[in-house]
Image (cartoon, rainbow, N blue to C red; front, side, top):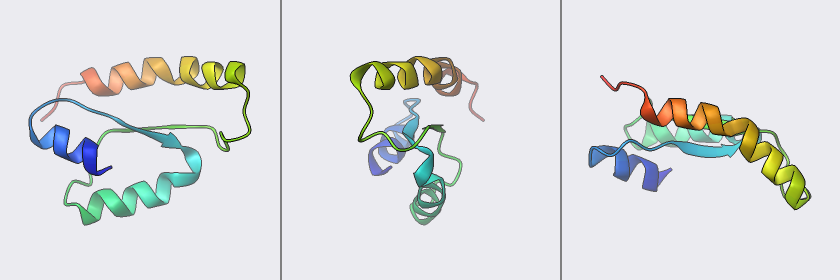
Length: 75
């Protein structure tokens, strides 16, 4: 999250990607860093016991949302 906030503060669009287990933690950390609106995309959880093919499927499923999130018009 620190990296994403730093990149965004430099004017470069970025998106935080994590598994769904970390929604609350991401909310809390982005607020504590003073950037509650940080762009984020969440994938299914857990990931540590997934096969390479399952991880590719997670990535493929998230790709459109990641691209849409990082390319949306910022205010």
